[in-house]
Amino acid sequence: NTSQTGIHGDIQVRWDPPPTADVQKGWITLEYELQYKEVNETKWKELEPRLSTMVPLYSLKMGRDYEIRVRSRQRTSEKFGEFSEILYVSFSQAGVEFVHCAEEIEFPWFLVVIFGACGLAVTVILILLSKQPRLKMLIFPPVPV
Image 1 (cartoon, one colour):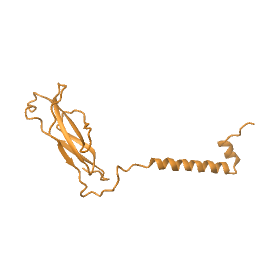
Image 2 (cartoon, helix red, strand yellow; image 1 turned 135 degrees about the horizontal axis):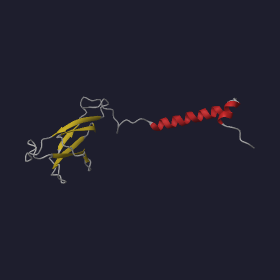
Image 3 (cartoon, rainbow, N blue to C red; image 1 turned 90 degrees about the vertical axis):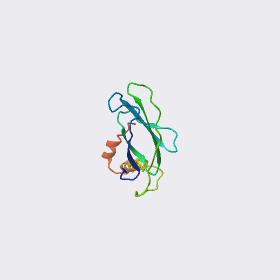
Image 4 (tube, one colour; image 1 turned 90 degrees about the horizontal axis):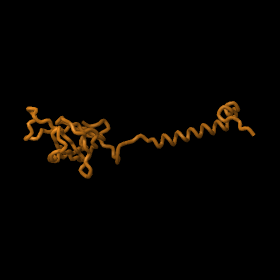
């Protein structure tokens, strides 16, 4: 699936249990750990071990390539087995309008703070310059001499 903005995509990864494990008859219960990363990154991102052989991956960035691998262990064991072969996933921009930006579009909080501070300063100046002494007395009480 592709997000409405065209910046992120979601996939669902599925795999079969190892052929040597007899999971069909219930003799063995396996947990699976899925890891993924961008092709040019060095650190793998891990998902929590789970019993399912199907895992959704959300918010992967469009226009980037990913590597995915899985390993399993018996539920009663502490050690995982070896990783599967690496699965390469590529998100292309075909059919998606792409806005050229380095990263995601973020809300401009900095501008909101700046304009808010300017608006507050203008309001205070107008109150100080106003000819209404009652309003001045409410906001700025007289200082004793």
